[in-house]
Length: 189
Image (cartoon, rainbow, N blue to C red; front, side):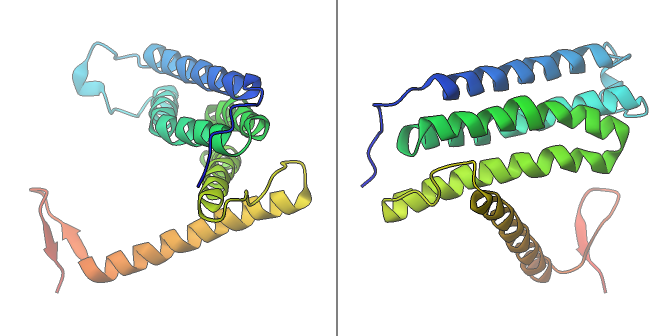
C-alpha cells in the first residue's frame, strides 16, 4: 500500500507549480496579443501569420499538458519524493516549456528539443509513481545520475515504440480510410 509522505519540504513542487502557471499565463497573453484579426471569428484558425500560428499552438499545447504535468508532479510529490518532483517540475516548466515557442519560431523541428525532454520528465514521473504503486519502491530516487538520464531516454523510446505499435494495430483494424468532402470516411478498394 502506498502512503502519503507528508514529512518533507514542499517548497520545490510549489515553485514548480508557480513556474508552470507563470509560463502558462505568459503563453496565453502572447496568444491573445498575437492575432492581428482577433475580432474576426472567421480568422480563428488562419495561420498565415506565423507569429499567430506559433503563439496559438504554444498556448493550446500548454493547455493540453496542464492536467498531465500537474497531476504527475503532485502525485509524485506526495507519494515518491517532493524534492525530486520539484526539480523535475522546474525543468519541465521553467526550462523546456519556456523554450518551445522560441525553438519552434527558429525551425519547426527544433521544438523537439523542448518537447522531448519535457515528455521524458513527465513520463518518468508517471513510470516512477506506477512502479512505486506496484512494488512499494521507487524505480529511481535521484535525478543527478547517468543511469537516470539513460532511463529517461529508454522510457521515452519505449513510449514511442508502443505508440507506433498501437498505430499499426489501429490502422489494421480500421483499414485504409479516405475522408470525403462531407466528413464521412469510406473504405478504399
